[in-house]
Every structure is written in C-alpha cells, then in structure tokens.
Image 1 (cartoon, rainbow, N blue to C red):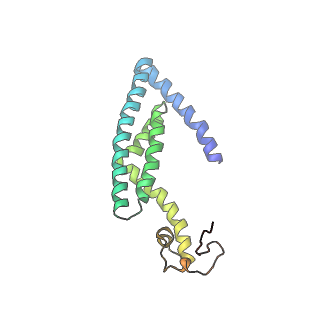
Image 2: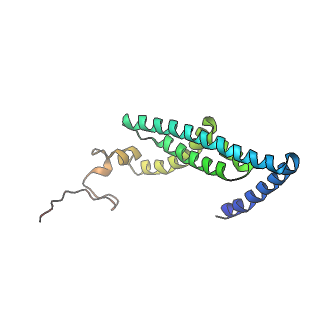
Image 3: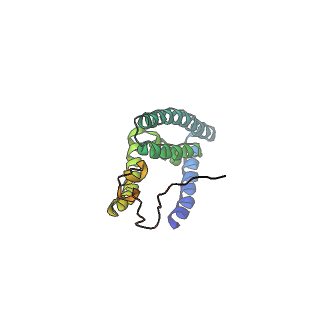
Length: 160
C-alpha cells in the first residue's frame, strides 16, 4: 500500500519535471503537440492490439480452451491505454511498452506466474484447477462427499 502511495507521489513529480525540461528545450506548443500525438498514436495502437487480442481469445474459447493469457493481456492493454491518455512522456513510454506485443506478453507472463502459484496450491489439496474450472465429475472435489465443507453437490426440485 505504501508502494502505491509513493508511486502516486513520485510519478507526477517526474512527469512535471520532464514536461518542463522538454518544454524549455523545444517549446511549449511543440511539447503539447507531442503529448497529443503520442495519445493519438497510442489510442490507434490500442484499438489494433485490443482487437487482435480479442480475436485470439475468441479462437481459444471456440476451441474449448480458457483464454487466460488473453484476458491478462487485455488488462495490460487497458493499463497501457490509460497511461497513454495520461499527459506526460514517462507514462507514455510505459504505456507504449504495454502495447508492444513482446513486452506485453512478458508482463502478462509475470502476472500469470503469480496466479499460477495460487492455482498450484489447489493442486496440493488434491484438486487440479482445471477440474474446478471444467467441473469434471470424476475429480475428487466433485464427488458427493463434503471434504472441506465448502461444496455440497445435490439435486433439487421446485414444487409450486
């Protein structure tokens, strides 16, 4: 939590410093023009990259697979788009890094590696994450026994 607070204080100070220095070097109007140009280019890149990620996600869903990587890449794209719309050159560089496919996939792998550790803890309890997601009836968790007290399997009938 303190890290985020520190980040919200340091990033604007760095942005203002860079904007002032660039404005003094090339002029205020050229600086404003560069900020607007980077936002325009970023929005167009975001649209293209977002549509291609969405198409890959739909292909995986049609193949019966879960588009986990594509969902995480979508989140990275959204963060990158927000950073590109934020005025400043430092956030634009970070935003463009989120939109470039190679760096976006590397960021997505980093995020997914954190979630893989959580999913692996379920495997230690005798339940594979894919069994939970796909609701396989032959998995230990899907039996009628109540092992951990959190899932009860049963049938019901509505009588009016």
